[in-house]
Structure formats: C-alpha cells, structure tokens
Image (cartoon, rainbow, N blue to C red):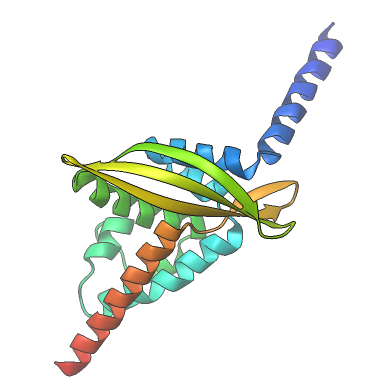
Length: 191
C-alpha cells in the first residue's frame, strides 16, 4: 500500500511539474498579472528568461554607478539597504537585482495612486516557433480618470516551456532611467 501511495504521489508531482513547464504564453500572462496584483516580484523574476534578467541588470548598472559616483546613493540604498555600495549592486544576482529595483519602482507607482482595474488578454501572435507575443488591454484608474493601455508581453521557448522577455513597460522604465543617467552625466560634466 505504501509503495502504491508513493508511486501515486510521484505521478502527481511529475504531472504538476509538466503542467507548470508546459504553461502556454497566455496562461503565463494571466499569472504575470496575478503576480503583479500580489506584489510577487520574485515570482515574476522566476518567469523571466535568464537573458532578459541579465540584460535588465547590465542596462541599469551604469545608472547606479553614475549616481553612486556623484554621491547620490538614494536609489542604491532603496534597492539594497542603507550603506549599500555600487559593489553590492554589481555583485547581486540578476534576480535579486530585478526584484529590488522593480519592487521599489512599483511602490512608487502605487503611491502615485494609479490602480490597475482590469487586464484582458486579447490574443497572441507567433513570431516563429520560438517566440510568441501576447496582447493585453490594461485598464487603470488615476483618481477619477480612466486610462487604457495596450501591452505586448513576449515569450521565448525555454526547455519544455516558455520564459518571458522584458515587457514594454519594463523596457520603458529602463530607457527612462538610462535617459536620466545620460542627462545627469551631462549636467555633472558642465558643472
């Protein structure tokens, strides 16, 4: 009896593992929005393709280096704690770096009063056998004002399943921060 129960438990575990790895890009998109709603940034980091996490960190490290060099460590300390140095950010695992930065950015967005009221998956388009894009309509409220945004989430084949690439929002945040870094560098050079 014990052997039968152990075999049944093993089969259930294998089925669950297969189901998680075989989640479709649309299922992963729905999970992504649930994770955002619940502030589960490490879960989102776990959904991301390893190259996406690495790109995120490599694009934002120069920002932290610039602010650290100029003596402005506010962002660095928000991300990694009081007394954090650029070396701490540089040594951080790609997932830890992502979770710390995106978690802080999300906190700022929440404190601004923007609330996601609904996210509807419209459909998906396969770019090829290895990349699929999922279109989502996002509805927000900012006070009494209703806002609508279209977001495209991209997924890349990874092993037996799919991994998410950086979303347009996250890429936009990276580009905004890179622009801020560029402007800060130019201001510092002029002074």
